[in-house]
Structure formats: structure tokens, C-alpha cells
Amino acid sequence: MSTTKEVQEYYGKTLQKSEDLKTNACCTAISYPQHIKDALALVHDEVHAKYYGCGLTIPNELEGCKVLDLGSGAGRDCYVLSKLVGQEGEVVGVDMTKEQLEVANRHIDYHTEKFGYKTPNVRFLEGQIEKLNELDLRDNYFDAIVSNCVINLCEDKEAVLKEAYRVLKEGGELYFSDVYADRRVPEALQKDPVLWGECLSGALYWNDFINLAKKAGFADPRVMEQAPITIQNKEVEEKCRGIKFYSVTYRLFKISDLETDCEDYGQSVVYKGTMQDTPEVFWLDGHHEIKAGSEFKICGNSWKMLHDTRFKKHFDFKGNFSTHLGIFDGCGGAAPWNVTASKGSTGGSCC
Image (cartoon, rainbow, N blue to C red; front, side, top):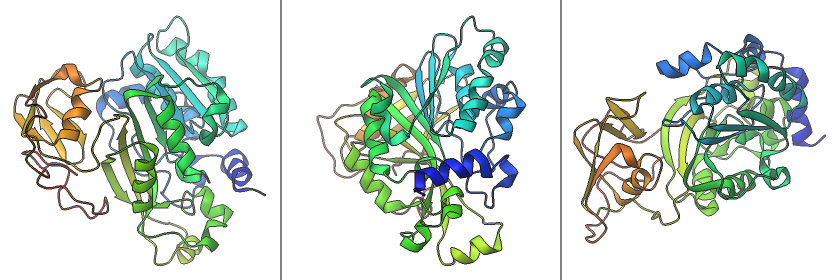
């Protein structure tokens, strides 16, 4: 049986609810902001029961946006997104597991009524996320793509990233959580169907992921959140002895002229505090806590991530690219769980 078929079997028949998983790889504890909690409270119980995500994959400022969910499962995140983008927005979920899609489709009318919409703004497509070209999804269409603990389940992760880059608008972003390893997972473990289903065997070595992302066109991957993964099953723990796994949320922008390193041009921004759900502070990533009303020094790439995206209207921008001052202080290439800076730092810094 192919890995794809094994994953379909595991998520379609073996798992019946979140509690059936043997690790927390796909169910990391998350502290949700209030607007996400409010949306989650409206999601149908059956959809909640079939949730296997590993992080929070809902970026800010989505009203009116077109959003694609890769590996949408029973539709929990799609329905949260449906509420956040509003009646004028659009959400498309892609999944390859029939049983999960049946749950998602069964509750479209329920959520349309619950959200007070005249017509549904969400739809679900059956297919593999590394083969979006087979689903008639247009180039340069989506404002954002999300994915929650699914890309690791794909054999061809490079194809997933390339297809995501293709269907994103310029200035759009791939915002997703997934499982990563501190080293390359041995081939013998990669053939274990249970470990694949538990999101471990398919976990990329973090540095291999960075290189694949850059090859696909995402020049400057940014870490939003990270957390260690615990294994509650002794047999699984023994198989994976020596390998450490982490849940990491990345933000990858499709901005064609980003540089490979964070360069200093003497630029800064001031956040206006105008995003409804985050009026006091905006997190560009885990190193950029941009407080409303305060000047914040940033590198050229970070400047573009704010200026050339849907976030532009919420910032005042100072400087340009006329004077280059070298590498932005604080940049480095450490593993996401070994960085010296941390969420909550202030004063301007880069990954």
C-alpha cells in the first residue's frame, strides 16, 4: 500500500476522534485569541471531534480575503475562516480523505445559517495538496493559504510548496503549522504507516524545509510559534529514540524580490493599531512584536512583508532602499527552537 493510501486509511477509518492519536504532534495545546474562540464556539460538534491540527493557522486581517486550506479534513479551520473572511470572502478546503470530506460537506448549510450568510462562502474539493493543478485552482488567486499539520503527511513536499506559490497572489502568504525534526528521519521509520499517520515519519529536518521553501520561491521563511512534541505511547517513543520533534508555525510570503538575508536599509515602521483583533500589538513573526504607536526598526524584507501585503494600510513607513547599511543586527540561521530571541522581545529584530 502506498503512503498516500495508508494516510487515507489512517485518517478515514483508523482515527475516529482526536483522542485516538498516540502523540500530541497533531493536537498541540493552543491558547486562542478571543476572536478565534468566538468563531470556534459556532462550529458544529462533529467537526470539532474530527480535528487533528498541530497549531494555530489563522493569520490576522482576513476580512474579504480568498483563503485556501490545504488538508482541510473535517473542515474545522475552514469554518473558522469562513466566519472571519465574511460573506464577501471565500474559503476553499482541499483534502484527499472521503470520510473527512463527508463530515465537512454535511455541515455547510449549518454554518451558513449560523454565521448569518445568505449563501455559503466555503467549498471543499477532493484531491491531493501536492496536485493542486488537477483541481483547476487559478494562478495568483488566493490572498492566504493555511495548513494545519498536513504537509508532513505528503511524500512530495517540494510539490506542495511549489503549488502553493503558484496559486498565491503576489503579497499573499502561506501560513501553516507542521511537524519538524532536529535531524533527518531514518528511512526505516519513514516506512512505518502508524508513524506517518501520527505526523512523525514525514517530518522534515528543519534545515531541509528551509531550503525547499526557498527553492519554491519563499525567500525568507519566518517562525511564528514553536513547541516540543511529546509522545504518550511507549512503543512509538522507543521507535523514535534520539529524535526530537517540534510543532512549528511558519509564515511564508510570496514577494518576488525578497532577499535571501535580512539587510539593513535604516527603515522603520509605526503600527497604527488599526487591526480590530490586535489593536495594541502586531506580531509579524516570533521576533517582531510591533507595538502600536512606537517606531520599530526593521530589515528590508520585513519592511516589504508589511508594505507589499494586505497589512500596508495599518502602518506608517519610514525610509526606503537608497542606503544599504549591511546585515540587520540579530539575524541568524539557527534552528527555530534554538534562537536566542523570543516572542515578547522589543526594539526591532529579525529572525
